[in-house]
Image 1 (cartoon, rainbow, N blue to C red):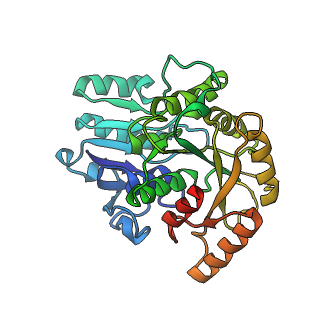
Image 2: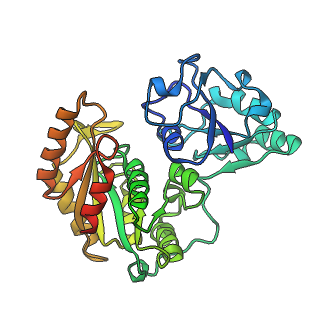
Length: 340
C-alpha cells in the first residue's frame, strides 16, 4: 500500500509513529507531510529508514499516487489538531483512505464520515478497541512461548522501536519470534493488535492476555510491546495492565540516555535504574516472577559511538544485565543474551 504520512512540525523527533512506519512497516511511503521542511527528504534527517520526499500538504501529491493518508503523530492525549483538517479533507476527496492512531476517532467526525461515504473511502481508527474484551483469566503464562515484555523508565524511550528491532533481528538470526502490538504504531506495523491505552481499565490485562493466548503456541518467543512507565503520573495504569496481562518470563528495561525527568511532567524526576529494576520485578512477582534480563538504551542524542558505548556499558552495570542501543549497535546480540 502506498501511503502519505502526516507529521506536521514534529518530524522527526516528535513523530514516532511516522518513524516506526518508515522503519518497519510494509508500506511504500510516497511522501511525508511537514510544513516546516518542504523540499527536503526523510533521509536528510533519519538515514536508516525508508526515504521519501517531504511536502507541505496533500495538495502537493498527485491523487493517483497514494492509497492512504496515515497520521504519523501521537501527541500527548491523542487529540486531533485542527490544522490537519485540510489534509484529511483533501485525502478523502481524492479517494484516499485515512489511517489514524489518535484517541480522536475520525469515523465519528461528521465531516470526515460524510466525505468518506461520498468518495468510497475507509476511515481506520486503529486505536478503537474491540467491543468483546473482558477481564484476564491469568492464563498467559500457560502458552508454549517464552514471553519477554519491554518496560520503560518513561514514555517515549523506545519500547516500540526495541520490540520491532529485536523481532526483526531475531527472525533474521533464525529465531521463531512473534510480536504482541499494544499501541497504535505497533498495530499499524504488524497489522493487528489491541490498543491498550484505549481499553477500559478492568479489561487491560485481559486484552493483552487475549493476544498472547491467540498466538502464544505458534512461536518460540513473544515480544510484548510495552507502554508508558510504572512511575509515570499519567500512564502507569496501562503499564501495570500490560505487565500483569502478559505474565512475562523476562523483562527488558528501556531508557533514554541522559533523561532525568518524566517527559512532559518535568517536575517528576526519574528514579535510579536499580529502583526501576526493583519496582518492575516486585510488581511482576505475584503473577510471573519475571526478572529484568536485559536493557536497551536510546543513545540518539550522543554524538559518537564511543560516548554511546560508554553510556551503554554504564547502563548495563546499573542493570547488572546485558544492554545495548538496538539502533546504533547489534540488536541480534542482545536477543541472544536474552535467550541465554
